[in-house]
Image 1 (cartoon, rainbow, N blue to C red):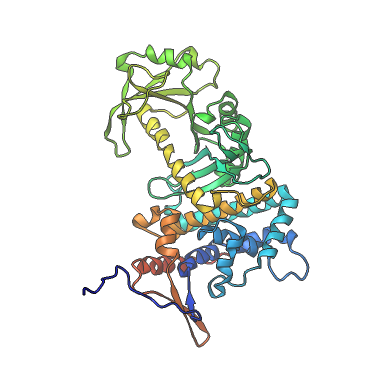
Image 2 (cartoon, rainbow, N blue to C red):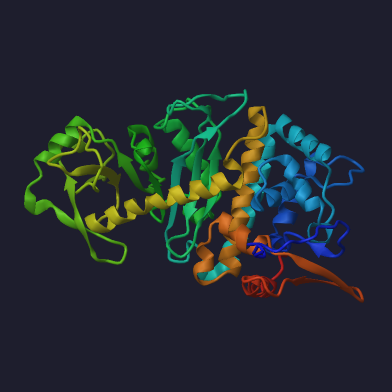
Length: 456
């Protein structure tokens, strides 16, 4: 009789383990909060909502929810994951206390949102100073990507309506600062809208841009050093005119719909006017060309706007549209920057915004867990704080390819590491599992964070 060979070892499970800490890698986020001064800033901002003789500080409660979301939670009750580890996350409020705080903040929605956003903007500037050369604006200009995201609702929630994709839910408009090829990105705007909100509503794009600019240092709130980048949803007369308004003079790179007028101008572009498109490494992009449109097609647009069109052989299996020409896929965008191939490459890199949307979906934006719109607006601020931490921690502490890890990979490799809590004398030491493949990344990142100056 042959003995059966099992694929996995049998392990006997018993409760009652002591001094074992799950989510031990979450100390990276806790140390990031401490060095950035986010805890003190949020606590000070939410002081008006702290009741007399209250045990829990409103700022700490809100920040605990943001930490839970950063670690993979998607509802208020997931803060219990932190409550189970007081050695790492301290005293954590009960579920009813958390719910009452969200209700209180939602009751004075605009005031609470202004307070939270002001605290985030203050901390963001400190993080940029700490990051120094690793900051997204270290090279000079700052790029803000605006993009909409559909959030599906599986129950009847306020402002949840049928969407343009025949789903049901909400249609927030998000804004992200692009950290470039060596990093990820951080959220700077989140405008909650009903599911039937238009994709190309200029008023919403203006509001989202204002929210994003308020999160940036003052020197980036006007002038050419700030680039606003959108897809064709931002290609409206009102939005482009607002960006180019005298005294604001923001740089922009916005996609444009191929109208019949633009299509006819493309057909009249002579062959010598087409320039080969380039890749990010400077090499020629095979089968892609760029040209600039001039003439009466620009008459109704702001002065100084340039219209760049790109034609490219579609990939096998792609269906051509009515606005394509001669078997080539046509795309178009408007900008104020000089240089055709370079500006076209820069606009094409807007695709990184899709990575930011994917990260947001994996960090609390898969659904909006609360019923009222005012509550879900507070939730969106919590999601942004979680995404801030997931962007700031790699920027301050990680190096190499680890800086590019998205939230799912950060959780799998770093945050879920287990540890053992050892008390010796008056010190508490968290010993991480030696056999965990990424323990070295965690300890090295913690060393970099501890070497940063404390706030104040």
